[in-house]
View 1 (cartoon, rainbow, N blue to C red):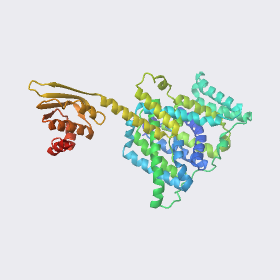
View 2: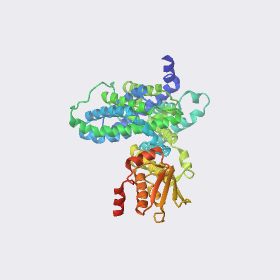
View 3: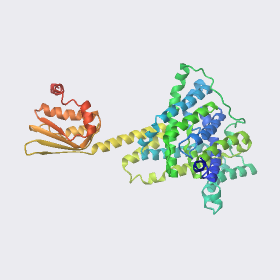
View 4: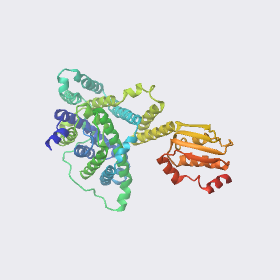
Length: 494
């Protein structure tokens, strides 16, 4: 028990605690901003970020990953809040959590294996661009002090790690935030602060049940929103888990993460918070600051609550320029610069999938649409590529039999090519089709085989099929009609 606790929770105490402090500070303005997007009080997003982080620290399948209120989820809530109010949002959050738990038990987290590396790279690059774009409002129509503080923050973040001893003791983003806050307070610099984003809560969250009627009408209202929240939340969480896997060179349990996200959202709904999911920006901050274990996520959630409830007046003084510097660092570190350099050397299809994913996410600000487009394009390119790997040769045997040898995969993209390879006008008494090195994948392929056999029979040629593997033979037995005399008559009738 104790060795297991040490291995999971306390193997990196200093790194996890310091990283958790940085993440907690970075979460505050984000949670407030996402609350404003959703049309709810800032405390709704802050409570959600606290409860999501604390619960996922115990229940999640990816140690070191941060979950909280997110922009992707907030955008899905706008209409529900506007038309039905906060209580229905809390109910939708509970149902969202329940759906995510069901998805976890159905092991649908394994669907991530269908997401190609090009889609993941596009997702990462799009997130980096969106994170940077989200900082631009803080850098427009402002005084020179903001630019100076942002530049100073970036200098601290990138130069402090180069300083011997000191650079390794403290994470540079934490030094950036604390240092610039002290400078702003000491010199009374007039810059936008966290307090200007919205009023921080001064009480702890309390357990409450959403004040909505428990009937089918309520279910009809919240179910579409809950389903959307569940899918988008898990999609973003799974993608973020994959990225943290790569950054830390460790594996995550995707199905456990699905269930953990569900539990966290149920807890969030019962504590008066909005639905949330994993955050790529904060997760990258956590990893870059030295966070590796569950302790970092727990510290982030607990410290966040302590900061906003008990240290609100101090937290309100944090200049937004300091947090902008941290988020710019995140966007620069998140973007895969190698993917731009490799555009010329990678296959064009992979590059197109990556670019399309980036374009759709940046244009729609919806991660789900971008990933969906990327996955569909990947599937189409893969199907087209595999469909082209088909060879059909023929030779005439000594007894006059024309033998066709099929090599490759026959399915919906290659079925037409399969049919076109046969010479139906050649006058032969017998045709042998050798399929020992071929595989038939779907009913389109079976229909193509039917067409070939029936056309030969219509010309008075006997057809022998040999070499079918077990899987292909099963499909042929179930769906093929070329041995049915009526099928031949029907084709001849046309």
